[in-house]
Length: 47
View 1: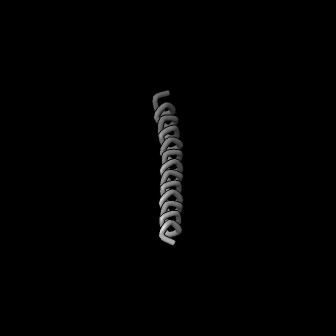
View 2: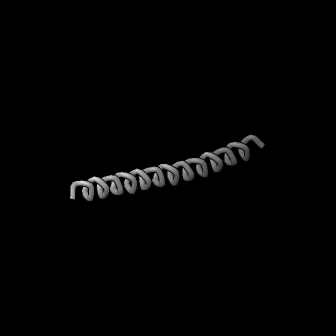
View 3: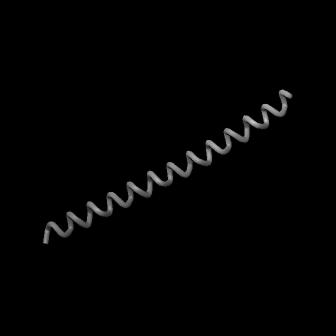
C-alpha cells in the first residue's frame, strides 16, 4: 500500500519535471527566433 503512493508520487514528479523542461525548450525556441529576427533587422539597417 505504501509503495503505491510512493510510485504515484514518483510518476507525478517526473511528469511535472518533463512538462517544465518542455516549457523551457519552447521558450528557448521563441527566444532564438526573436534573436534571429532582430539580427536580420540590424543587418538590414547596416546595408
